[in-house]
Amino acid sequence: MATQTVDATAEDIASMEIRGAATIARAAAEALAVQAEESDAADPEAFRAEMRGAARVLLDTRPTAVSLPNSLRFVLNGMAGESVEALRSSVERTVETFVADLESAQDRLGRIGANRLRDGDVIMTHCHSTDALATVEKAVEAGKHVEAYVKETRPRKQGHITARQLREMDVPVTLVVDNAAHRYLNDVDHVVVGADSIAADGSVINKIGTSGLAVSARDRGTPIMVAAQTLKLHPDTLTGHTVEIEMRDEDEVISSADREEIGDIEVRNPAFDVTPPRYVDAIVTERGQFPPESIVTLMRELYGDVDDQPWTEPSNRDAVSADDR
Ligand code: RI2
Image (tube, rainbow, N blue to C red; front, side, top):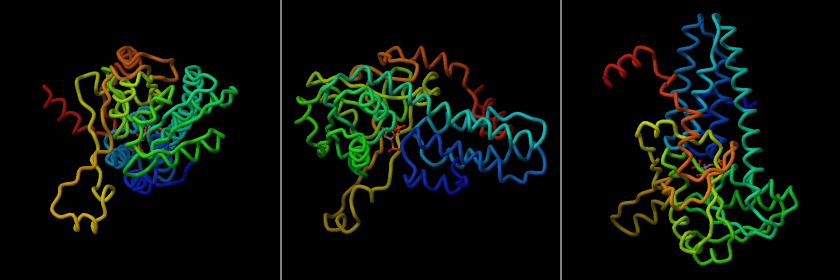
């Protein structure tokens, strides 16, 4: 298990040293285990308050990937016991379960997604998604030959990570700039992407550029598979909330020297976009593959009774519900 403190983990998530929805979820859960281990809380209530505070620090790092609150909720709701010692070991056990579940979900999802890929298929990827790569890995393990067009994915070029990991699987890779995607989609059998959040209507929130790629793919008749374990299902969207799209620093897009040379301009750097369900052929989860419009059924089954924010202090919770009334 990782041994990073909550503050170090939060810093790494915010700076994207730790990135990718599943990886963020795991790191956050492991940071809570470290917090529990190192806590010198005097009594159970102090311990619980400390864990809630730690969860809020992690929660405040990045707003879009729901795997982060889902992971914090899982760990905080698993806290049980009448003594600090009992609470501490419940956190450690819950985090171990969380990490094991995450790994087996990705494994199962990979095997399901691999069934969609045939021997000789060419895929196109966007950004870097461990869930998406799991489907390719399982296909390769099953003896299928798969080749990949890998989109660079500006501004942070996470496509390079995808290219490297595909090469480690011996998958032939052609790296293209984002603008070349439409040009090569005729040669592609499947677009395979991950997700940071899935909304109740089946919309897919993923790295900026996914929606444009999906529109292009639909135009070319190329199917789009979204690989997303159920940790990516966003419970708040069941009650009408929308998913916040993170805006990142403009320095990721343009250097200050270049900017100065150009003159007075605005720069926008949204990290994610929303792909409507009509552009998505299948959402592949560890529970099977779903047409996007039916994902709400699974979301209700898994998260239907989730309306709690266990990181909120009990006094504020009362205030919130009073406001709601
Ligand atoms: P896995 C990433 O976000 C990408 O958008 C990727 O598709 C998604 O997380 C899911 O990644 P970022 O953290 O959970 O790079 O499949 O902004 O690894």
